[in-house]
Length: 596
Image 1 (cartoon, one colour):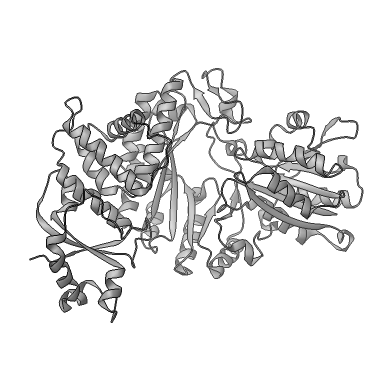
Image 2 (spheres, rainbow, N blue to C red; image 1 turned 180 degrees about the horizontal axis):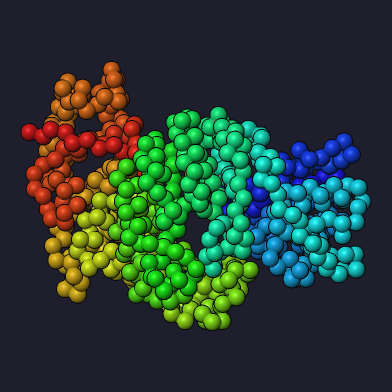
């Protein structure tokens, strides 16, 4: 029997842990009695045409005696429904099964609404999938297989008892093929369950946390390290819920660091202690990324979503991590939560923004079936889209128009803050607004008024838009902006441009460097300068050095001006080197050259 496990990912670079884990577990469990079972995986994206995917599936499982199974999530469920209907017409006798969080909590209703689907695998899928394909191979009764919900030939829905929870050490490493390890972000789990009960999260349903043994985790992490995989994301819901275990894993990564592989962890800041912070400070820059869910700084909101958050402790933790300069920090906020109106959300934004994370993610509440938030939707007057991803439209505290505004602000933050391309410019400009929120709100409104929201702009156009906005603000009597030095702004914008790339064409507003050409050339040919500042280019010709660097002579002290908000006079020669980039944000290394 041919079995095809299918993932429909959000992006090509993503991979689906679930289908690879099911395949690996099943193949390790099958015996000679099931030699007729052939299991394959296929990964597509939601951006591919349905017909292209259908054609590929039909090529892979042309035999009617086949089982096709989909891993279902909020980002792909509508796609899976449409594709399943097409498969039913193309391969009428195929068994079409689904599993995953988007169908496990509503299996019966899902089957009633989607007649093309044969059944649902609920809960943990590895053992359930193995039992299903084994049973089908032996013509066993489906009613004997725990953990499935299925339709009979007479179209009745039968729900079997749930399957027992797995011993996580029984799981098989999911990525055995070299080809899977290439060109994708890989996902890994060392635990299942979450100790917290956040009301919007399905992980809160099962508060029991189960762990793989550390010896198994170390063996599996060694495979990633040996293969030099670029990025591994742990899917553990709260990785640092066990201090001893957290320290052990991070110490292992430190001792076995290959200089290439990065590891991403979702952690709770309130649980990070001094030992963990101390260890983090010793890691290679870029080895570890931390995602910290803040969600809100409003105490009433945090209480309503059953979440504990000590904002002062969060400030201390993020500041200590940031001081080390070696850990990428990603902080999350969620809009649309109970007791959070627009003003409250703006205060949460300012608090998190002042922590200066590498990324500030603005998310929107998703009212998921099975969650406590879904049960309380009427009490909170939650209005949300009835289709995936079930995103909130309005609440008792925030209106549709206000959430749409936040959607636009999210786009601005993503483009101008999270990209890391405007770091110094934003630092400078925010001095002239009452608070960070005020800047992003006004800039977003300006972008909307001028038709730029939702439009894809190239890099230089983005710089031009920010400059145009700042120029209009500086000359407007209606906005508080006194003090913006537009000449200084041009230098700071140019600094940010060169920080990310050696641009081929200078923008029209860039300070003129013609008078400095001889001075710049002399810096490249000065032996003392080369020894002191070009150590990463030993014995290389000047032509090659100039190809991988840029020297800009600014009319002001750019960094001090941006940091203080006051123009600091005095010429400054800066060397941008693109060979040694910052492992956290990809920016060039910058050195200040002596200028006389």
